[in-house]
Image (cartoon, rainbow, N blue to C red; front, side):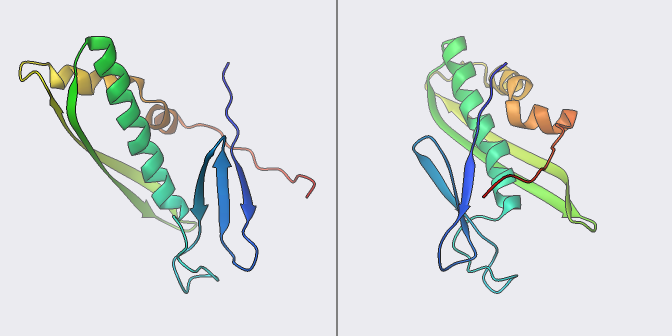
Length: 137
């Protein structure tokens, strides 16, 4: 089993947080004027879309390498729909455009394989359990 841990901490003098894993970081905040948000970073819904799309982008490259396909470009757009109270993600639509250096490359198979192995979207579809508990400060 593989595990990954990310950490988030409040940013002093703001109500935003900074999250990091290894040497990479991202600022998390609410839109300006919403519950103390200042619009300093991504909100959770945007991060969910980025997680879905970013994971698929990586998988497109992993699969392309395995298939011996050199990619010229990758474009992924993710739209996440939210509804209800509490607000929940109810659907995600992912649109993919990939160009290979070789015009005869099997792009449809590349996309199919990447979708089949994409960790984040497959985890969401299968319903990953989330447990929240208190920790010492």
